[in-house]
Image (cartoon, rainbow, N blue to C red):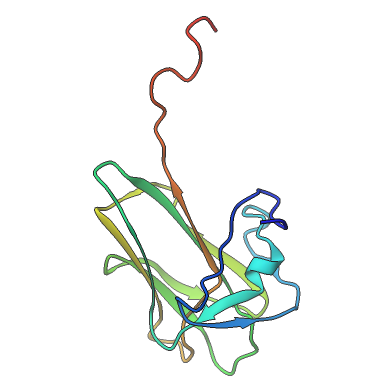
Length: 152
């Protein structure tokens, strides 16, 4: 992605996860500059009338670190509060979004599952549908053999 300082590839969802919404306003990153999120990526989101489901296959030894990025792009009457579930179990509870502030949810330990199904849904105290601006999935790769030449 040309605007990404970390040279990540960001792909649009083309309506797969919900109706696209966006803003041209600048956003603030609540996690500091830890994720260095491109403005163009965070200025768009999928807005869904129901839960947003993100899935990918696991494997016998597949470990992943998922990261979900959120930002409230609209001035709303009420609250958009979210919960993320992993394979039906609550993974992250009570995500409160503030207007034009980005917020990232991530795992500090790799997760293992045969299949991954993350659901972003409105919390019981929310009166707005869920949104998702972006997500990243990092696969843990174990080095094979020695990391350096034996002569080093």
